[in-house]
Image 1 (cartoon, helix red, strand yellow):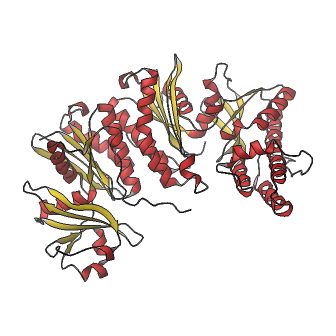
Image 2 (cartoon, chains in turn green, cyan):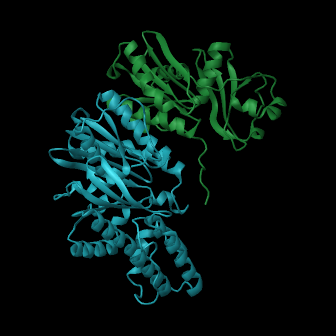
Image 3 (cartoon, chains in turn yellow, blue):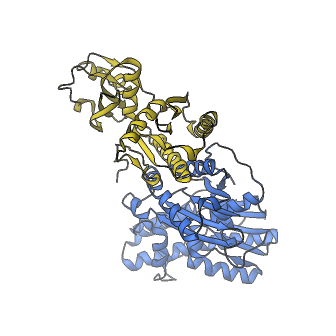
Length: 223
Length: 330
């Protein structure tokens, strides 16, 4: 397994994970508005415990978004700083995909629709299915939609996850039988997915300056 | 020692490399003016998004230009405040993460202290103690700089910053964003004798007020119309009053505290009329006036690198927390 350090600060949770020697270790804590305080000490700690230096890693991964703008920008900036200084490539992982991977690993749900609350009557929407290697893959691009724009055709067997299903419960209840309340992204799933991307040598493995957040909401200012 | 300086507090991404022996080795700046122009002001979220795109490419450029590698760096300095929290956080997170890997300190720098130290990047710098006039879109302060790290605010604006007043009046006159420098240019064509605007709080104290002056400009604009010449006349009268207020308070501070040097910094220190009048006042009062070179009047990475170098030499300790202080008192 590739040696990858992953971080995520896209939600109120703050987490780091490290894959090496066919195992994954991680740190996870709730840290609303305090990611800046904990993220670097957590990274430092997990590497020291594994007795690894940055230069021995194969890549840096980060929860790329969608999520809190400040949070995903923090993760991108940290990923850039770490990767540039240690001459490592970066892998950005969709936070929706990481949530999907989590419920697959923990609950065995192989087909999920992810809806994270994006405020302003919108959700970040993702559609995921596990492949034969037990890795969640997108079957449609992540996007920003109004709940009413969600398409449930051929999605009858899918289970909903994410904060959006709670917030827009009234709407989603009409269309979906089942949803699981999961909303805090964990780096240990980011690192699993990154290891898969790294193994496949996807175009997702990029140089540090290409490690940029994926906001999905592009219009943020009005004249 | 060699230090990388990073500035991301507002709408410019600035990066520089400073060497305490060879001085400034390289500096680069990316301005976001075009990005914010259609909104008539800085949009914080857009500013943050641009910093995260531009910062690392600029860092690579300065390393190349300075002909050094990452291993040559002894420290990194970043603007920790005051400024826009999201924008500050980009520079802070990047700097701290680099510091962690390279095992060198990432030093938080006060943006206004860095402005105040910018003239030290020039060949014949001032020496402590001195009086500093910090004038920009966010600040108007008279500061007693007794020694490095020891500053006392003697006077400040009670309402608008002077640069803010320039920009607002420019907006009233329908000038393109950011209006301050455009207004100064227009003032050159103004009739000196047509309007005279009041100077606020002249009688005593070292504080400033510019919002009344802005209102005065607005009233004149409404009353006398928007003919090109009238706009130039208003621009002239506004600039004269604003500059006069700054000069008068400087002169008073110099007299009261017996300063022999005046340092002028911040975006408005690029204003030609202000420089003329301060130079005249300086001669009369027997004070040497120092300015940064024009490109270092506005936000830049060079002043951050320089300020960081001084803190490094003074033995400032750092930790792993990504610290930003959006409202950092000096």
